[in-house]
Image 1 (cartoon, rainbow, N blue to C red):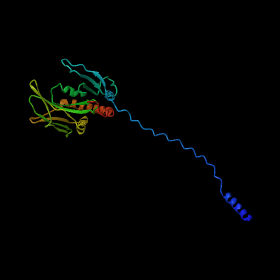
Image 2: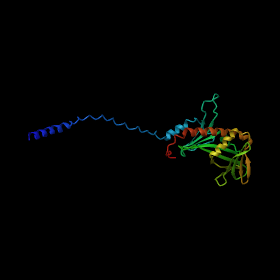
Image 3: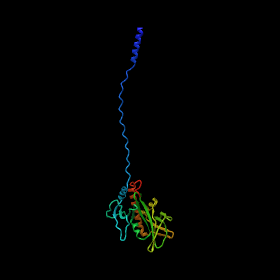
Image 4: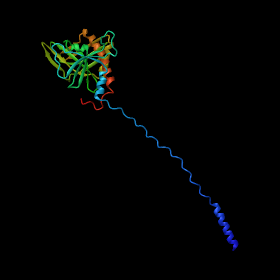
Length: 261
């Protein structure tokens, strides 16, 4: 019996030796700090009416134009001379001049080149052009064929021929044409916004060697006098420069929702 008890004690001791003491807990590795949140790009503030006005004003220098003798401006209307030269002229003369007119009630500014301004006074057939800019809106390139004569031609079409090619052919038979009498004569005029293709056609006048402009109506047609064609070409040159300059300066400064115009 003592042997049995001894064997049991030995076996118990051997069994105890097989059990290894628990390893001490190892400290866990330090967790990396949380990553900083990615920076969110802040959108620039939307342009305002003041931003747009500054952009437009940056394209030209302005001088007031006093009313001519007998001329009376309406309330809210101001007139000025705008020079769109990039650098001051050596001789002091502006090479890219426009006559400006601002109507505060309509929030509208017109820029008219010299030839077209003159022909609005001189009563000859002509193709007048001008730029109209409503606040916070893209500029519009306007054409306004005008007829002065002794009797109506009921003008309904404009054609421009450059070096034998008909580059512009605008039919406005179904559009509104302004008609009026002046003294012993009559006056007809139609205003329209030029398309991209029509603006491109007018740019061709800059290099034209031969140019002809015709105003057609149901009672006949009349050409723009040859003596006035150089003025028309100069108008086209200044119109191209000023239109592009205004658009480049203001296109990114228009408030997304407009400015209440």
